[in-house]
Length: 191
Image (cartoon, rainbow, N blue to C red; front, side):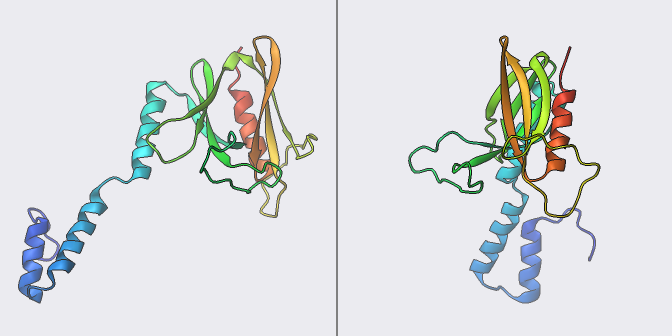
C-alpha cells in the first residue's frame, strides 16, 4: 500500500490513520484537516503574483525589472512612518519598471491583487539616465559587482514632460544595482 496514492482521499487517510493509531483526538484531526486545506489554497502572495502577471500580459509588457525605492507620499492618519532612509524621514516603497509598447510604467511592488500604478511616461520622452550619490554627484559605473559594503546610490531618469525637462530618482542600496537599472531604463527609450 505504501507509495500508491491514486484514488486515496483525505477521508481515506484519516480512516486508515484512526484504524492504525486508534480514534485519536478529534481536535487534532480537525486541526490536521484545516492545515491540509490551508496548504492547498493559494496564499495572498501567489494571488498578487498572478494578478501582476495578468496585468503584464493584458498590457503587452515587453519587460519588467526592479527599479529601487521611492518615497511614498506623506502617510495618512494612522499609517506607520518608517525611518529606513533617515534623510527622507518618510515611508519608502519598492517599485518595478514595466516597459510597455509605447510607455514606461512604474508599479508598486507588493503582494496584493491590486495593481498600483505610480506613474507613466511615454518611452519617446526618455532623455538620459545617470547614477548619483546622496549629494547629487555623478557616480561612475563600476566594472563589476562587489560584495563589500557599498554606497547608497540613486538612479536618475531624465525625461521631457510636454517639452519641459523633468526627472525621477530611484534609490538603491548599491552603485552596481543603480547602474543596472539605469541601463535598462536607457534601453527602454524609443526614437
